[in-house]
Image (cartoon, rainbow, N blue to C red; front, side):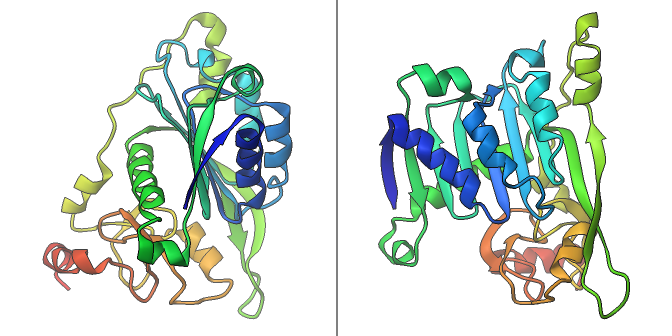
Length: 283
């Protein structure tokens, strides 16, 4: 179901997307300068290592600080499970959690929230919408922006590490490790007029031609193709808490595309990709 929003209602619903998120928050905006009210909402997730935050910003390829200040980078990098990405052509704005999504004219920028005339369309999938077609806007927009994210440049990645003391204990969060960090060097050298040079985007879907290549069904991260273990190590550790092999996951292990809950540990490949996967991987 879609709902048109404007003014204070728009700001309020964006806060709710942050506050009601249970596993993932997606922020797509060319410009990032967080309003204090949004910082407060996001900080409620600071101590949750299972909460994945994905931020995509854009524009100003010659000086990223015009699109996101170091203050905002420092704010996001304190979270235990976060990705920060860049796409120079980005103009669209999209904010989502695992239940709701907001298409908007509004940047994630304090001035926009306080001064501009901004509108948005709130989308929330429902069981009824699956039969009436009301979920199509949500599905199509999520699918499109997932492609945009996959083709963007990863500038910063921080992932949680879990450990299990023995067979009877559950996994325990230990720490988070920074796996990639280009932004710290950029801001460190900003005064030296050092510019950011973006690598050409990689089309992840095309990588399936490599026989050994697959994708984590929970995070979408590229991993070795393995039907018995279709998850990255960190995701597998989280799955190990409950070990529900039929739990709905997010991605197809073969193609990396969104599965909308149609994949699981028991069924890691979307049905329409099964034949291609068999041909590529000989199983």
